[in-house]
Amino acid sequence: MRISIGSDHAGFGLKEKLEKHLRELGHEVSDVGTHNDDSVDYPDLAAAVGIAVASGEAERGVLVCGSGIGVAIAANKIDGVRAANVSDAEMARMSRLHNDANVVTMGGRQLPEEIARDIVDTFLETSFEGGRHQRRVDKITALERDRG
Image 1 (cartoon, rainbow, N blue to C red):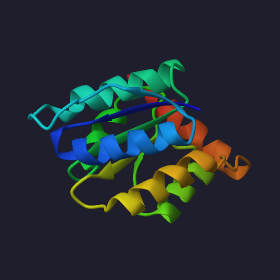
Image 2: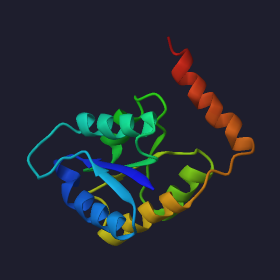
Image 3: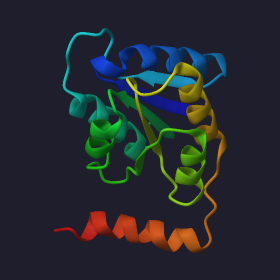
Image 4: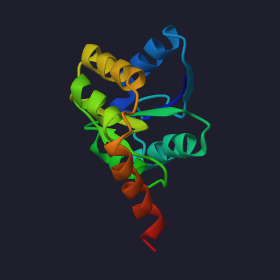
């Protein structure tokens, strides 16, 4: 799978570990940064991942900041992105099953590496259930189109 990954300075350490894990699993990973723990603005990295996913350059996105909240808010401003900030694998599973989330966000200051790996693995392995949920995802997409 083609995955775009990014973080701010607070998520840098966890992002690096997740990137290595994803590559070991055989995924094609594009790291948009940051590439060290110097202070950066998380909206820039969230936009880069969001644009990669929305354009089809990447099939899924992974974002990490201190809490996961800021990158989720920023990524969700990109049309076509459905970013979910999750704290465990069950939330990741549900974000895919019911919401067809295409970007997962996490808190680098909140989660140990093992849980973050479980989140990413579950997020990538879970398919959208469709059915009654498709109508709801379509309504989310319409909000992007109709917000004028």
